[in-house]
Image (spheres, rainbow, N blue to C red):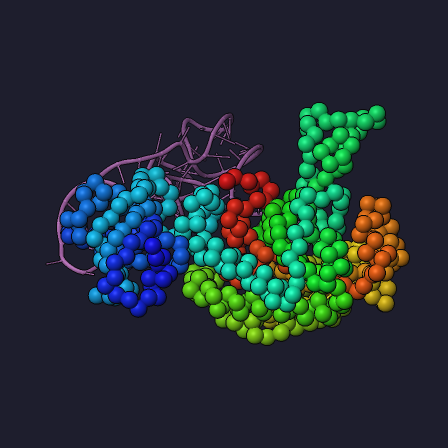
Length: 460
RNA sequence: UCCCCUGUAGCUCAGCCGGUAGAGCAGAUGGCUGUUAACCAUCUUGUCGGCAGUUCGAAUCUGUCCGGGGGAGCCA
């Protein structure tokens, strides 16, 4: 059985074909039925022409949007405009009908809000089919990029015993009876009785474990799900999302930035080459200008500025921000958008942030005020990558952890990297769904993952 | 957690200075000798998100609860 993607490309004609797929639209006249069939292999469908005499009236009636069919026929040049080839049907089997009275998808545009309510059926639409193909292609490209460069793919754990990893609220994992948990003599929950013998959570990042392997094997990466229990209802946050985290030994912040830049450029070039049809669809229906923008970004290195330079630019901005920028404050959404959309007019890497607003593990600069951190900001979305050179000096790291009230005992295994054969190393995290948003132009992050999990949302 | 918007037919939406509902699409029926999200004609569909209040009268005004969306913060 050939798929539509192949059939649309083949030069062969007058060959016998068996095709299976789902009906997108039906158009009929007195004697003929035209079906457009999609099988998911590509955005476009194949047109089937059927003589009404070949099919019982009962089946004709059931050939509506959403029904699944198997058609045998001859692939021919189409005499009509609109497609170059079509299938002259000889026989048709209705595999499963989709009663129009209650099948929710129609041959028209639906709102994203409505499609979210039928997330189990939305992959049958053009947009979500294209998204699935783009997600797939970019996942593959991510592995290919790192594999070509000799990085090892490390499977970091999903369940973690660390109480906090400096990256937001965590989901607790427990087998204790939440109505009557084991308690100690002080009446507090006794985690010795819990499954792991201590408190456990879903990971918020594979970074700390990736560092362990980088500091043994050189260059590694993880690509897996991560979880944040933050109560944030926005178009850029999910409770469960996928993150790519490379970690490189003998690498400083400059090398980290180079890698981030190469990485994004590679992914954009890959997707432009392998999914042009799907991207063109997004360009036309979701966000005009995406194609052009991706092409230009894929070719040019990112601008790099320091946080301090960014602050100066913000202070000189020709209008007032809601939140007045000052050295030491974190970049607000409005600041990021100004920098990327108006000042640089493209993606930008901002580095060397104030120590106070960044995580404990980031390498401290000699100025005593800033750390070797970098964020890649893109227009419309803001932060798509966050990374840093890690602090490899044991004493400095411990001091910082104490200042931030972290239990160094809990992190002994992490500190051992600095005790024994410590090396400069660096890495970053890329939010996969934000990358998909960037590439497709889709506004809401809940629409770029098959089954979104967000606060209050876990149907399907 | 805070702020704003919104909820009317299966879908998208109009009606909202009060007088108990309407369009397009979808659906049904018929027509059309190759259609392109076909076209033409006819027809069907509603606890106007729930509850309470104001009023002779509420889709319309008020309160409240629930759902959806957007923004902020946090971040990827």
